[in-house]
Structures are given as structure tokens and as C-alpha cells.
Image 1 (cartoon, rainbow, N blue to C red):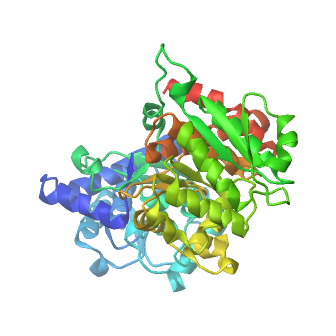
Image 2: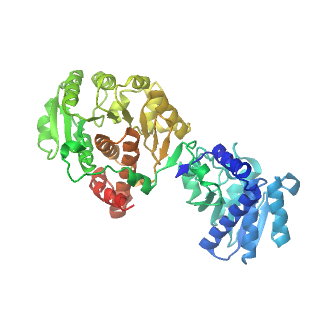
Image 3: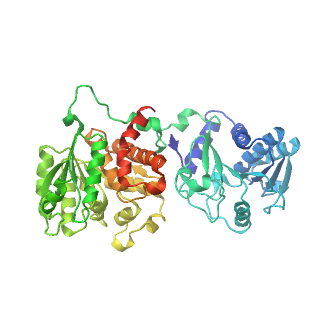
Length: 515
């Protein structure tokens, strides 16, 4: 399903009215009726208190108030503006509600008793808000949030940016959100996702052609779309058909990262996996590998790769390697920087770059523009900050929290010519051709050591099976999150470890194959 920013949804609204001849009043009525139906479905007939603003969001709320009143609910509306300050459509809905017998008061203060045993419909600002809330509106929201009553927000909780999910000064904490046509990006990104509660996307008659337009560049990843990306397995095939992945990972004290990446790669369907390791650690690796093979590489003398490892890596992939996954557990040194730079500039095999290989590119991301082959980058927030902000000391989630995640990811992917997988809650995948994908699987239990190494292995395996970089990334992220969800259902979120995610990859494939 596509996801939109506020301006894109406004364009869809205008086109629906002007090009398809569906009046705005009809859309508002349908939005209000859909909201009322959802409130009635969840709560049944009970006391309803509607907070309505002066714009179209308030108009939706007034329609919902009128409909719930007609269904036998006890309804009261608090309009935050007097009639002479309402938009034309909102004014008409106000008149209709009053004529139907709905009690309407004006102001920004909730009277004692209004919230007692009530369901609140939040229809104050919706997606039209573009500046921080303060003063009486902030106090109004504070009162509502402190009350503990159930809240249903119309379109988006008042105070949440529809484009970024950020809190604009103050925001309603809804239990449910009813939106129309398409989800907004702010519904999907945190903290907006938390404030929205359970999200319902209702059909109010926007033309399908507008909701599926190629002009909309952001999508949520749903099961059917992910399932369609799974590579086929012809009856007549052999291991060479499914890619040979070289995993360049691990150093003294950090060998586990290499094993997890390789194991995930195999579980995700790679035909062959070789682990490129510092030669002084070969014996350590040899005692643990089973299905994987080993490629001893020059050692810098401290159990980490030397710059001289570049040539044998290139030789290996020139002969039989289809994909290189590099980074987990490597450590960062001048040698590692030389290896990463060399692979970017000279490798004929596609690259999945993660962890320390990303850190090796900190402040030098534009070298990726010169990449000889496709590149997939899989940073978490801190690693991405290192790519965006040159001084290493500026790394950290705090800096990334200041940016528009989706648009920054898109700009980075376009500028560097890469496929960027920005790991987070949720993970956002951006491609150089201007598309972005917001993942819908995963849970907080996956915030555990090695989880990112598992994703690297899955993405590399799918790339080796012939998927385009963006498709391998989108499917890889979805499978990774789904495996984590399956693991959480069996063990609980507090107890998930990375190997649990690996062990649940087969179940994730089986689940998707039924979609």
C-alpha cells in the first residue's frame, strides 16, 4: 500500500473533487460516517465527547457526532472556534449537527464531567497542522491525555506531523486512529506510530488510480507484496543457481558476527557461503563451520584483516563469488578502510555493506558514487549519522532524530546511487530511483546483539539468488522482521537472541508462501 505525506493527500483530495467530480462535502460525509461506524463497532452505544477544530478535520468530527447521535449515543461536541471562524465545509457540518439535536459548545476547556465514562473523538487538527502547538491547545491536549479515557483520532492524532511522525509541541495519545484513503508517513514512523494506537485506513471513495499512482514514491510493505518477491525454485536446479556469497566478517573476539551472518545467509536460501576470515583465526572458525566454507585472508597481526586481503577477495569473487557481504565484526582500522574502498571501486560482485564496513566510510560516503557494482547499505541510526555527519564524534541516534528520516534516506540513496536500508522502528528502505519502503514487521525484542548481522546475511542471500538490490532489501527486511515476530511469539520479546531469529527464518518463508 502507498503511503503519503500531507501535500500528496491534499493533491489526491483536490483531484478527486475537480477531476472526478466527487464533491468535497461527499468526502467529508463519508469520512465522518466511517469514523462513527468504527467508534460504534469498537465501543457500541455509549457516551461520546467530540473535540472538533475549525477546519475539515473538525467537519469530519461533526459528521461523526451527528451520526452517533442518530444511532442513539449520548453526544456532546466542543468546538474550539466560534461559527464565524469555521471553514465553509465545517460550518455546514456544524449547522447539520445542531439541527439534528447534537449539543455543541465552544472553547478549549473541557468541563468537569464531560470525559466521565466517555469515548473521545479527537478531530481538532488532523493532517493540516504545520507548527508546534502551545497555549490553550497544549493545555487541552494535556487534560485529555491525563484523563485516561479512550480516544479515537480522526485522520491523525492532533499534534502529530503527518510527514515525519514527530510531536509538534504536544500531541493527543490515541487508542485508535481512523484515516482515509492511504496511511500517512507520520502514522508509520515513531513517535507518531505510538500516538496513533491501532490504525484503520478506511475507503471513502478516492479513485483507485490516484491512490496507486506512480507519483507516490513511498509504500508500506504488506505480506502479499513481500510474498511476490520470493525467488522461485525450479524443480531442475542445483546449488550454483542460488548464488555463492562471500561473507567478509569477524576478527579476534568478534567471530560470532561472521557465523551469524553466514548462517542467516544459508537459511535465506543461498546455494553456497564462504566466510573470508583473518588467517590467524582459521582454526577457530574451522571448529565451528559445517555447511560454510572458509577463505583465509591476510592478517594484520592482531586477528583482524590486513589491507592485503583486498586482492584475494577480488580474485575469489572474480572466479566464483556472486555477492560480497562485508562488515560484521571486522573492527575499524586503516586496513579495513582500504579494503572497503577497494571493493567499492573494483568489485564486480554486488556488495552488502554493514556495521564496521559502514563505519569505515564515515564522512566519506560520496566514494559510493564511484561504485563499480550495486551497493546495499544497512546502517542503524548511529552508523547512518556517521555517513551524514563527517566528524566521528557526531554519531548517534540523536542527530538522526533531527532529520526527516524518509526524505533524508531518499536523498542519500539518490546522491550515492545506492540502496539504503536504514534500520530502525520501522526500517526504511530507499532506492536510488526515488522509491522508499516502510517495513511493517518486527518488534522491540529484535534490539539485540547480532540482529543486524542476521539481516545482512538474509539480504546478501536474496541478492545472490538474482533479486534486484531494492527487492532483495525489501524482502530481506520483511523476512527478518517476520522471523523476529515468530521468535517473539514463541519466546517473548525479552528473551529473543539473534540465533532465534535465524532459526525462525524457515517459518517466515512458510508464512509468506501462504500469503
